[in-house]
Length: 77
Image 1: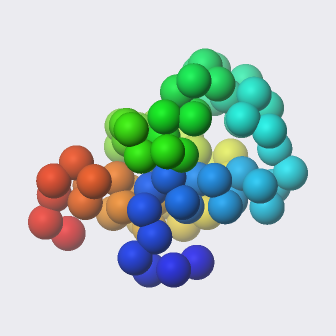
Image 2 (image 1 turned 135 degrees about the vertical axis):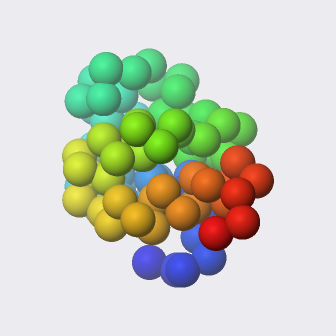
């Protein structure tokens, strides 16, 4: 995965690799399909707590997802 990938790119790539639809991922996270679509498009970012849940469900490095989310939210790391 590209170290400069956005949160949305990481989520979408991992979701597709896991063979999950938007609705399937949303169901596993108890969120709406619209929420997942917003994360993937970059219109919004998941909270850090949700980033941890996403990482667990999608089998991605939680640190990479959290860093991408923090950068998108205006963090400096």
